[in-house]
Image (cartoon, rainbow over all chains, first blue to last red):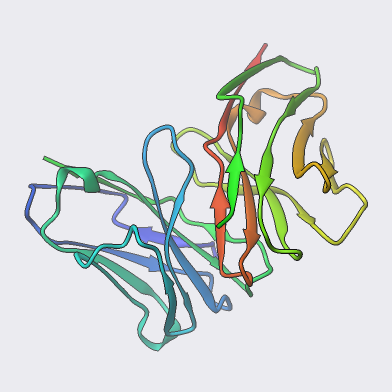
Amino acid sequence: DTGVSQNPRHKITKRGQNVTFRCDPISEHNRLYWYRQTLGQGPEFLTYFQNEAQLEKSRLLSDRFSAERPKGSFSTLEIQRTEQGDSAMYLCASSLSGTQPQHFGDGTRLSIL
Amino acid sequence: AQTVTQSQPEMSVQEAETVTLSCTYDTSESDYYLFWYKQPPSRQMILVIRQEAYKQQNATENRFSVNFQKAAKSFSLKISDSQLGDAAMYFCACLSGGYQKVTFGTGTKLQVIP
């Protein structure tokens, strides 16, 4: 196991298009987190899963955003009708439990034209 | 709500010298964890050091150590014998709220001068 994997690394799309990102956590980790990071800022929490259950969503996560984690394995984050303000790095992290450190992926950089 | 504040946007240190990065936090929880993460340019974020709030002893990890002042809600990171590979963004983070989410500071960019 080589760690948390995110795909794609970069995504460029036109405003108004839908995009989907994928995150494969470390296999034995049951917690999975999504963050958004803009330039010069720390990661901002978006949502997290305990196995397949989505337990918390940030107010940052508008109704254009949806995340899933079917079968408690990989997770997808979809953004519908993208806007300029969605341009950011989207980070995924996983952990063995809530008190254990989170391991981060390389992120997916989204650019909206 | 919890907040994490890093008041030093940028710091620099001479190679082999020691540098301290500051962090203050605020949480209403009595049980929480504090972390320092390192994010090199265009590379993934990695954990540097972790401190449990219930432990009085400051965490140490090789050249990295923390000064945890619980009453003052301060959590600084000391890097000894700085190396060129230490150059990165450093983020302070707090995990509380029933261990549901981590709040990050805005980061400190550390430059190591050869």
